[in-house]
Length: 355
Image 1 (cartoon, rainbow, N blue to C red):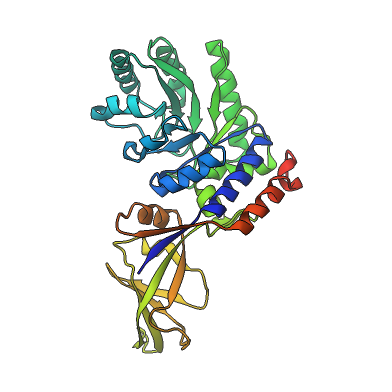
Image 2: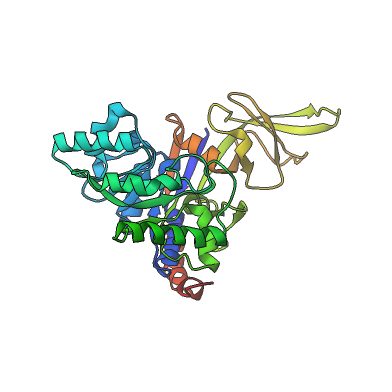
């Protein structure tokens, strides 16, 4: 039966390595947990590792069991009917519309509760965010609100458009922040400079006023999202998908070549089958239907019915499968990884300000 394998030790290791890398550059790491559907075992592991602030995009993934142990930043602005739940469930939210912020302020006033916000700025991703020339006016209105606390501003890259952050972006973001603060007459507490796509810039450049990054994909996949290549110091297989071979039969390809085909027990109902890849490169995916995935065994006859094939998942596949309510999740820890952890976080690669 298909299942998700979740190596909690590798997730903790990746988190600790990334945190050390960021902290040595005076930057706070906020784990983004939306791609793991707010999984409680994963959150518990990260809390035990010392994380107390998480970013999530869906209110339904906010776990009340961890109240008092951690708080949340809600990344996606919620619908009006959920404003009350928003204020009660999360400490902070990302906002982009001044009228929405005004309404949240009024509801927070009725609840006698302060709500913190980060103002998302559309830099060049073109998904969501305040247009740069409106930012100052927004902030001037927000700071007059009695039950809204502006914590800072945020930027985003590579969520919609595939344009990665550059050294020029960092320079201009810093100039922009300086100009905003000069006009406001006070310093912003948080400048959240982006997501996993900012890590390559962090490795080689001074990010200046940026003092927070929101990291999800690099944490759970160990991938440089600007190139889709592995980050050498991280594990890429912290979360994998495995499926069982149900059938093996000879088949003819479209060009009438004979090959040995296996069928495994996942399909496009379970995950994005175009975004998974067998971890062993001696087999390849032929195609899929709703409940079946066809595998070319490349005429290797040592596979048999009941054998397991394990798959690496890209972000889209990982997100979809983690939200699948009927997919078994297998959690485990690895003592060897724990022994590696202390060695890596003290590595010169991470201690140096720039590596």
